[in-house]
Image (cartoon, rainbow, N blue to C red; front, side):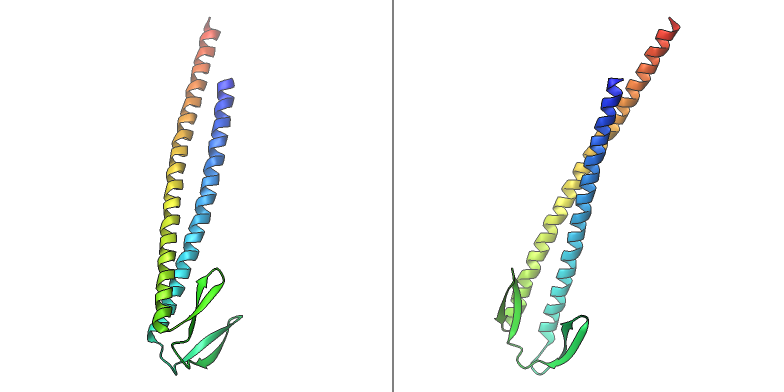
Length: 155
Protein backbone atom coordinates (compact mmCIF):
# COMPACT_ATOMS: atom_id res chain seq x y z
CA UNK A 1 0.00 0.00 0.00
CA UNK A 2 2.89 2.41 0.67
CA UNK A 3 3.85 2.48 -3.03
CA UNK A 4 0.32 3.51 -4.04
CA UNK A 5 0.21 6.35 -1.51
CA UNK A 6 3.66 7.57 -2.51
CA UNK A 7 2.68 7.56 -6.16
CA UNK A 8 -0.40 9.62 -5.35
CA UNK A 9 1.72 12.15 -3.48
CA UNK A 10 4.11 12.36 -6.40
CA UNK A 11 1.17 12.85 -8.77
CA UNK A 12 -0.20 15.63 -6.59
CA UNK A 13 3.20 17.34 -6.47
CA UNK A 14 3.57 17.07 -10.26
CA UNK A 15 0.08 18.52 -10.76
CA UNK A 16 0.89 21.44 -8.45
CA UNK A 17 4.11 22.12 -10.34
CA UNK A 18 2.26 21.98 -13.67
CA UNK A 19 -0.40 24.39 -12.36
CA UNK A 20 2.29 26.81 -11.17
CA UNK A 21 3.97 26.66 -14.58
CA UNK A 22 0.63 27.23 -16.36
CA UNK A 23 -0.03 30.26 -14.17
CA UNK A 24 3.42 31.65 -14.93
CA UNK A 25 2.89 31.05 -18.67
CA UNK A 26 -0.42 32.93 -18.52
CA UNK A 27 1.23 35.87 -16.74
CA UNK A 28 4.02 35.97 -19.33
CA UNK A 29 1.51 35.78 -22.18
CA UNK A 30 -0.25 38.78 -20.61
CA UNK A 31 3.08 40.61 -20.55
CA UNK A 32 3.60 39.82 -24.25
CA UNK A 33 0.13 41.21 -25.00
CA UNK A 34 0.95 44.41 -23.08
CA UNK A 35 4.29 44.72 -24.89
CA UNK A 36 2.62 44.28 -28.28
CA UNK A 37 0.13 47.02 -27.37
CA UNK A 38 3.04 49.29 -26.40
CA UNK A 39 4.79 48.49 -29.69
CA UNK A 40 1.62 49.35 -31.65
CA UNK A 41 1.38 52.68 -29.81
CA UNK A 42 5.03 53.42 -30.62
CA UNK A 43 4.43 52.57 -34.30
CA UNK A 44 1.43 54.91 -34.35
CA UNK A 45 3.49 57.71 -32.75
CA UNK A 46 6.29 57.21 -35.31
CA UNK A 47 3.79 57.27 -38.16
CA UNK A 48 2.21 60.47 -36.79
CA UNK A 49 5.60 62.15 -36.37
CA UNK A 50 6.62 61.22 -39.92
CA UNK A 51 3.48 62.80 -41.38
CA UNK A 52 3.03 65.83 -39.10
CA UNK A 53 4.24 69.27 -40.06
CA UNK A 54 4.27 72.60 -38.30
CA UNK A 55 0.78 74.21 -38.32
CA UNK A 56 -0.92 70.76 -38.45
CA UNK A 57 -4.14 70.45 -36.46
CA UNK A 58 -4.21 67.47 -34.08
CA UNK A 59 -6.41 65.99 -31.34
CA UNK A 60 -4.56 66.07 -28.02
CA UNK A 61 -5.74 63.66 -25.31
CA UNK A 62 -6.55 65.33 -22.00
CA UNK A 63 -7.34 62.08 -20.14
CA UNK A 64 -10.68 60.55 -19.28
CA UNK A 65 -11.27 59.95 -23.00
CA UNK A 66 -11.44 63.71 -23.65
CA UNK A 67 -9.53 65.46 -26.45
CA UNK A 68 -8.86 69.03 -27.53
CA UNK A 69 -8.04 70.30 -30.98
CA UNK A 70 -4.61 71.99 -31.14
CA UNK A 71 -2.26 73.38 -33.76
CA UNK A 72 1.34 72.17 -33.86
CA UNK A 73 3.48 75.30 -33.61
CA UNK A 74 6.89 73.68 -34.10
CA UNK A 75 7.39 70.06 -35.13
CA UNK A 76 10.95 70.24 -33.80
CA UNK A 77 9.82 70.61 -30.17
CA UNK A 78 8.66 67.09 -29.30
CA UNK A 79 8.85 65.73 -25.77
CA UNK A 80 9.57 61.99 -25.79
CA UNK A 81 9.50 59.63 -22.81
CA UNK A 82 12.86 57.99 -22.27
CA UNK A 83 11.72 55.54 -19.59
CA UNK A 84 12.07 55.55 -15.85
CA UNK A 85 9.91 58.67 -15.60
CA UNK A 86 12.34 60.75 -17.69
CA UNK A 87 11.56 62.65 -20.88
CA UNK A 88 13.55 64.81 -23.25
CA UNK A 89 12.80 67.37 -25.92
CA UNK A 90 13.80 66.26 -29.40
CA UNK A 91 13.46 67.51 -32.92
CA UNK A 92 11.30 65.48 -35.30
CA UNK A 93 14.06 63.10 -36.46
CA UNK A 94 15.46 62.75 -32.93
CA UNK A 95 12.01 61.86 -31.59
CA UNK A 96 11.55 59.24 -34.30
CA UNK A 97 15.00 57.78 -33.53
CA UNK A 98 14.19 57.65 -29.81
CA UNK A 99 10.89 55.88 -30.52
CA UNK A 100 12.61 53.43 -32.89
CA UNK A 101 15.09 52.59 -30.11
CA UNK A 102 12.21 52.08 -27.65
CA UNK A 103 10.50 49.82 -30.19
CA UNK A 104 13.66 47.72 -30.54
CA UNK A 105 13.83 47.40 -26.76
CA UNK A 106 10.19 46.26 -26.70
CA UNK A 107 10.89 43.77 -29.51
CA UNK A 108 13.85 42.38 -27.55
CA UNK A 109 11.71 42.02 -24.43
CA UNK A 110 8.97 40.25 -26.42
CA UNK A 111 11.57 37.78 -27.71
CA UNK A 112 12.92 37.23 -24.18
CA UNK A 113 9.47 36.62 -22.73
CA UNK A 114 8.53 34.27 -25.58
CA UNK A 115 11.76 32.36 -24.88
CA UNK A 116 10.78 32.09 -21.22
CA UNK A 117 7.34 30.82 -22.27
CA UNK A 118 8.93 28.19 -24.54
CA UNK A 119 11.20 27.01 -21.70
CA UNK A 120 8.24 26.75 -19.33
CA UNK A 121 6.18 24.86 -21.91
CA UNK A 122 9.07 22.44 -22.37
CA UNK A 123 9.38 21.98 -18.61
CA UNK A 124 5.62 21.44 -18.40
CA UNK A 125 5.80 18.72 -21.08
CA UNK A 126 8.52 16.93 -19.09
CA UNK A 127 6.36 17.09 -15.96
CA UNK A 128 3.39 15.71 -17.91
CA UNK A 129 5.55 12.79 -19.07
CA UNK A 130 6.70 12.18 -15.50
CA UNK A 131 3.08 12.24 -14.35
CA UNK A 132 2.11 9.70 -17.01
CA UNK A 133 5.01 7.45 -16.00
CA UNK A 134 4.10 7.74 -12.33
CA UNK A 135 0.50 6.91 -13.14
CA UNK A 136 1.56 3.85 -15.17
CA UNK A 137 3.85 2.69 -12.37
CA UNK A 138 1.07 3.13 -9.87
CA UNK A 139 -1.28 1.12 -12.09
CA UNK A 140 1.31 -1.65 -12.50
CA UNK A 141 1.86 -1.80 -8.74
CA UNK A 142 -1.87 -2.05 -8.15
CA UNK A 143 -2.16 -4.82 -10.73
CA UNK A 144 0.77 -6.70 -9.15
CA UNK A 145 -0.74 -6.33 -5.70
CA UNK A 146 -4.10 -7.55 -6.96
CA UNK A 147 -2.40 -10.52 -8.66
CA UNK A 148 -0.40 -11.33 -5.50
CA UNK A 149 -3.57 -11.09 -3.41
CA UNK A 150 -5.35 -13.38 -5.84
CA UNK A 151 -2.51 -15.92 -5.69
CA UNK A 152 -2.50 -15.74 -1.87
CA UNK A 153 -6.28 -16.32 -1.82
CA UNK A 154 -5.89 -19.37 -4.12
CA UNK A 155 -3.42 -21.02 -1.72
